[in-house]
Image (cartoon, rainbow, N blue to C red):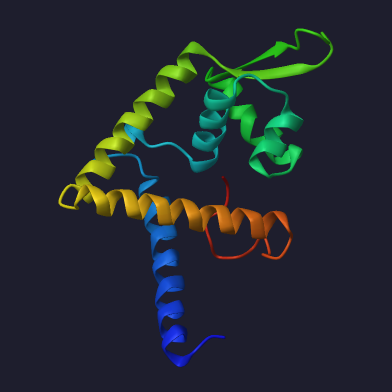
Length: 165
């Protein structure tokens, strides 16, 4: 049961999440004053997923990210065009297409990750290591809860919270 004190805290929490989402999108978490190292959120999440999970088809990529295949297809097209992702034939079914990071994609992703690490270090540099860990743990927990709720269909896609996973 939510109390009056909880209501104020929950109002503050939702406001801070909204501000965070806006700031993250404004900076694209590109790094410390390095616009060239910024990357669209969708592109970053797709490249990161391909890097962590390896080559896969559009349907598998969409399922692993919890989004629609048509969305993945639309978001992958400019990544293929720019040479960050390459399409290859599936090793067992030559008719199927597999997406994978190109060497250029691997290098670009590492540039962005490095710049983002630098930004995270700058923003939390005066935090105790335990505070950094706790923040990361809580943010991960929050994102997992939000993803589970979205997967269950209980959060409208138009909600004013960050999308993607």
